[in-house]
Image (cartoon, rainbow, N blue to C red; front, side):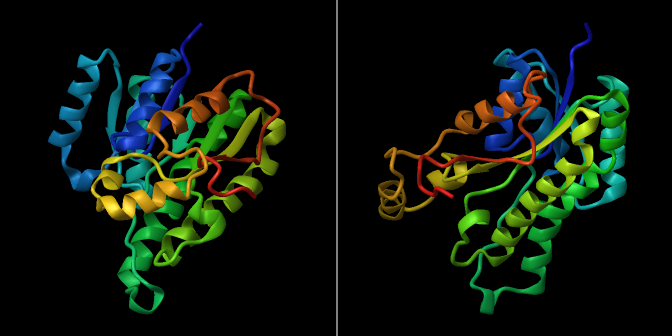
Length: 248
């Protein structure tokens, strides 16, 4: 039986890398979508690192803010691996500022990258999934899309919108064998988190009931669960991975 194909946007970042590795370990053919401002050498270096660690992962360039660029990325993946069965909408950025100091550029960059990207990519794979009567759309949101966060009106709005997208689309494609779900991480130990001053980081950790930051692998485990062919009865859901910090 042909291996199923998974595309992970933002696949070369901290959480994206863990998701790509976990899916590859589960036997999927995996493509990591990347933009990195067009830094193809950085993506190639990432791919080589994955190869050294035993993970054969394709890289596919695409600007998730641009519908046409997403179409080219998808065509590239499908040419080399086949039709996309699993899509993980993971691409995201932060441009934090209090709302009164937030610029239109801060707002639009985050909304385009974190929310509009979900449309730009999903819209171009959903028909194929429905035609084949199988598909998994997994959207990586955030705890701050559920509870809000000071200085993140743009980020919180985008991440909350992503789950609204999940719930509506899930209803449209449920009878076609396609599930659509959201994973909502809390504070995860990525490079960005390790650069936070120690006193602030200590305060963040003290607010997490399990007493630690999440690992990227904690998010990846949820993704592989939702991607499984037998995970047919969970759709339109939001699954938290935040160490108990926020319970809705």
